[in-house]
Length: 135
Image: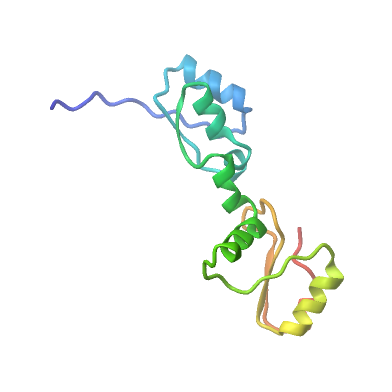
């Protein structure tokens, strides 16, 4: 079978709207869009591309929640008896601080949502656990 001709890659280093990506892909006859960042994945860009008839590589919006929400992932693991580290979810800092005092250190504290590796902290002692991770 003869090799297919090489096709150039198009890199979009900006954050265009889903509609702009769809238009760009169609007007440039893009065969496949590979989505890397978690923000557009969690916003459903793969679903939108596929709905427009454009092949896309990456999880759809529903599956991307595994990356976009640590709470969702932990709840899913717990509900399906998938081994995972102990966790709790809190609506306020006071309850979270009480949990840290009760569990002790070391402990990892994470904010839910798209943090891009930012909003989390590893607390090695209780004194440092008094401040939540910066947002």
